Image 1 (cartoon, rainbow, N blue to C red):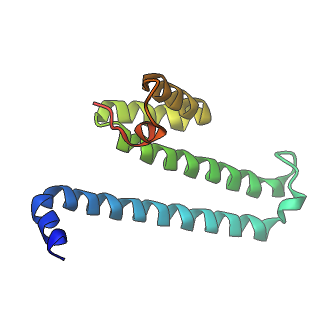
Image 2 (image 1 turned 90 degrees about the vertical axis):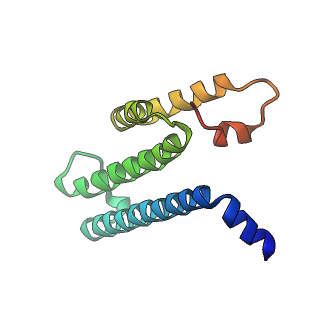
Amino acid sequence: MLSGTVRLITYGNGMAKTMAARKSLITLFVVILMVMLAVTGWATMVQPVWEWGGLTTPPDHAWTIATLADAYCGFITFFAWVCYKERRIVRRLAWFVGIMLLGNIAMASYVLLELHQLRGDDSMAILLTQRNG
């Protein structure tokens, strides 16, 4: 119990930032979950997924919209990690635009750039957690 108290005193500001980040991430992922449940439920009501035929017939637009929503929710999820990694707002904004416009092309490019910066003996934990200037 005492060590927890010492930690709160020692890392007070850092702990507050961690709690704020945690609450922001919880909010973000609750919103993503709700959007995905809503769009998937709506698309299911319009047309069963096994009847989807692409963009050729009018009812097929529901699953096209659901698929786009799923992709962009994934892009936002990846961008949350980019926001953690990148400390500079300009870099964050540039990667946001890239990810929203190019999707997985930008995401793969980001990971490849991060992998390129690793030294031979670095662990994958470095890739995931080390923040950039």
